[in-house]
Length: 303
Image 1 (cartoon, rainbow, N blue to C red):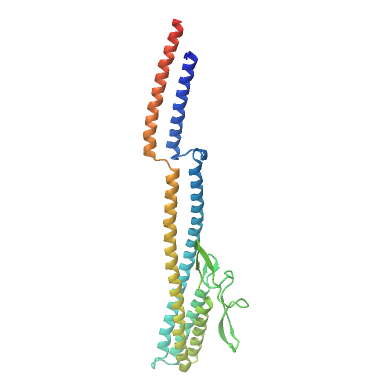
Image 2 (cartoon, helix red, strand yellow):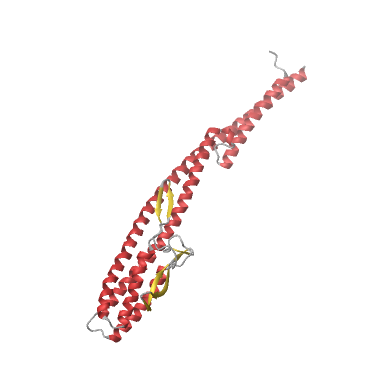
């Protein structure tokens, strides 16, 4: 077959175009750090990347939920620690009130201390996190405790839990992983109602200088402390379980990101080496094409 001048020129153009395209692709990889510039470059790989990214997005939703749950539980833990501290202080105050050296005036002074503790306990029981009451069950926009009067004795104060609303414990549960849920909240009624009302009865016994009633309430304060301690323990065990779940989610996300990176990210050391090699090839193609073209021109002149 006779090789014409036009065939030589076209071949030079094709060689330079191919070399330029490869160089362009490598330059794009170097600039974007991406292994494939278009999904069509490797459809199978792109499908795997999309699946992994979907899994990562789902996992990140779990991660965000777990963190917001952890923040709620931390707020609960702080409130319960305060409740425990109040109850212990009240027990110590009652022991002073029951001392043989304490008289009516001393007990009235201690009653004022307990009155301050009642106000503290109400504040703690009505703790908010992100403008939501943490001890109010599902009705997080409703204040859990208000101060009312004892139906048995209207002259006496009484802490009332969510007037007119469900009194049973309402467990708030959140998904923190595939098939994994956790209870977020603590039973506010069980934890605080007995405690606050015992503080009220303790204060009144001190004001009335009624040591017999004071001994009864001292025993009830011990029960209240046990209830607060139990709630603290339950919440603490949930926090530990949640932290373990967070660690698993974090490790899973790292693995997914690593897989995405392997499939998407170009090996920059290899790309740099290939780019330098392709630049040399491109220059060589230009040089050879230039020489070939010169020879064609020479033959045309001689012809």
